[in-house]
Image 1 (cartoon, rainbow, N blue to C red):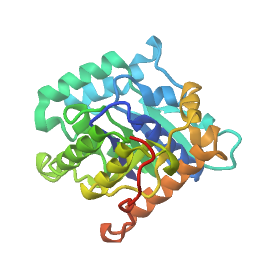
Image 2 (tube, helix red, strand yellow):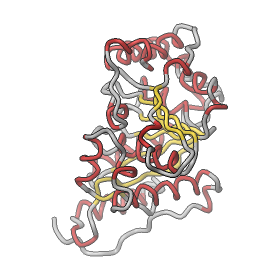
Image 3 (cartoon, helix red, strand yellow):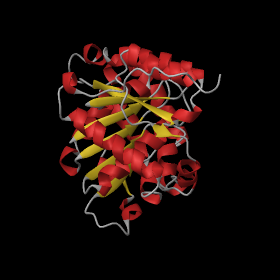
Image 4 (cartoon, rainbow, N blue to C red):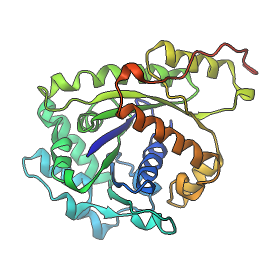
Length: 293
């Protein structure tokens, strides 16, 4: 089992859509996939067509994390939701499960994690190891921050991928995040050793519409050592419309640009996971004049 964490210091960059589309792409490839929603707003669950009801609170990941933070290991098999139905109509043997968030229980879990300090950092990693034989990949959606649940999320991963937009602030946030991920191993005394995988540019524009800011952001991602992927995800209303009906764009719009771009991104992600960083191909510096300011 490999654990991929999708993270960002800034909200609204496309982190959740990246999470669910990479996870769905893996499932469409015939793999057993678990999505972990650490975001109190429960957006990954919503993007997969599920929102926990009052009758299902006992199955919330937030309660599971509260148990773990207090020394009791929850049964993740009893908490997970099966969303494999989203793959209906596809000729694949993959599965798609979800550990779902709920605002009040996840907020309480956040408080316990903060109170527990560095000792609470590995709890999600330990929880996921109890179902390591059930999955090929786990994809974790984290809150937009650099502490608390976000740190627990990074620590759960083998790899951490960050998301930027064509905005200066997102590059600065990604640089901060990358630096923070490097301290996880020290914080957990070597129990958790996530590796930085790279940055994907989301909500991008075609070259004919690049602004000065977008050109500078693209080049800034390179010069800051963020290891940007060759594939970026273009702005497309079909991504948000798919989110609105609780289905990843890679499933709902597989033959359109969003589906093809997420599939291409997944190929890059998996290649990086399987090869040394020295061999990774990254986006180049751009030497063009922007079309607007």
